[in-house]
Image 1 (cartoon, rainbow, N blue to C red):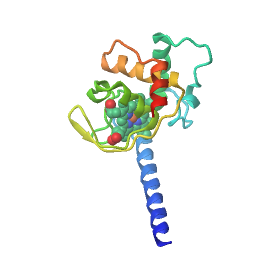
Image 2 (tube, protein in one colour; image 1 turned 180 degrees about the vertical axis):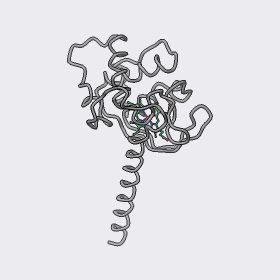
Image 3 (tube, rainbow, N blue to C red; image 1 turned 180 degrees about the horizontal axis):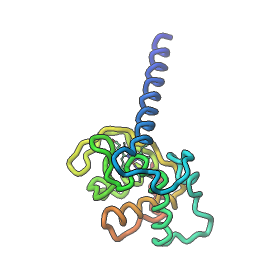
Image 4 (cartoon, helix red, strand yellow; image 1 turned 60 degrees about the vertical axis):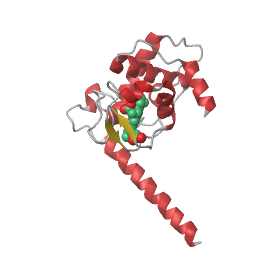
Length: 173
Ligand code: HEC
């Protein structure tokens, strides 16, 4: 009984801490790169790409051009809340998506982070971070789009991550 109570308290404390991290991210546009520059609405789409832009309609051919366009919308509507509009992150708390050695080192890991979040200590470009990124839900085509966009636009890649690749990764988890 006492054990149960303790566990319950721990869970609540963790939930509050988690909420605080997220709230912190959403109000952290104080680094000069403002989120409202994009004229986006203030609805909370923070954790779901499909609620922001919809899942790709059945039959839509996910060419790289299509994914880049969708990825840009997703980046500006979701990722900027924490990683900032310039993708440079926030010193000591949010890692950069711009020229990120960590992001580019492992395609599978990058898909997992977008789908399932990240709560482990990580090192990006030689700097240590240990914070909470929530899972960003969304259809395979949207996960593929955001990663294709970030790899190409912010990391100088000339490739893409396909919807199929995301589907396979999801099935392995
Ligand atoms: C609520 C805040 C938040 C949002 C929204 C968010 N992230 Fe993150 N992201 C983080 C934090 C915090 C970390 C570091 C997590 C850790 O320490 O394990 C992180 C880490 C990452 C990493 C691995 C580290 C790096 O910099 O390469 C990738 C990749 C990433 N995020 C991509 C994205 C993408 C793409 C989006 C938009 C779809 C997104 N994130 C939205 C907070 C967020």
